[in-house]
Image 1 (cartoon, rainbow, N blue to C red):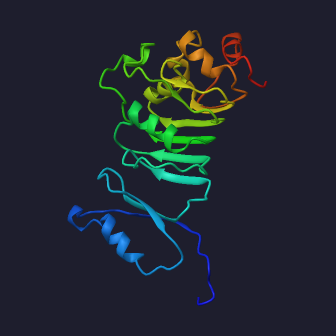
Image 2: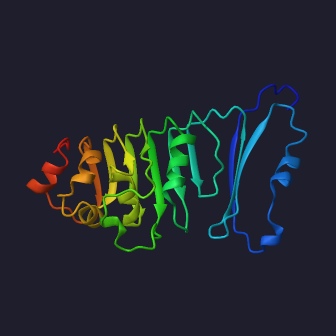
Image 3: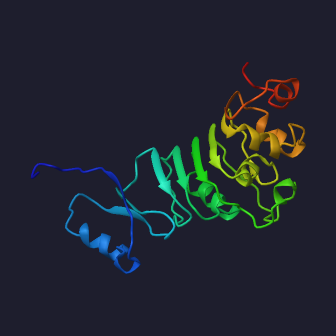
Length: 222
């Protein structure tokens, strides 16, 4: 393509790595692009050992709005254009990880998470309103949150106001039984604030419409 002047791309690949000694390194990927004359590139390499290896390669500056399938190994870089993010992992995602996500994607609007692992080794910690990490995470622009495929610890992570502040959340996808559990049957005050502006509740599982549910989600569209 001799006439090509600009090449803007985002390529994501995934491979099952059986032999960890044969993993591609950052330098290996860099060599692949050393002769590209269309501008600088960036890359995110994920070899966590618990999920298939992934490599995201993109032209700089990053201009795309969607980033999918990143894990706890995501480096701390800022991508201002990303509004839709999907993270997944098979090891626990801690408070610090979600803090980094809020800083790396300051204009995030749609956040989908998949992780069925316990976040804490203390099985009853989800009942506490306290935040041992002190810092409260804020997603200032987040309107849609998908927690369908997570352990209930992550429902607490996002809905508990002492851990996360979601001032614009209007759409929530969540398992009904987990939602009912972490809100103490829709009576828990510490999760009420982040639920107050939810207009659309997409629930996995059987959901009962009652005065308790309707009162807890005061902005819910009936």
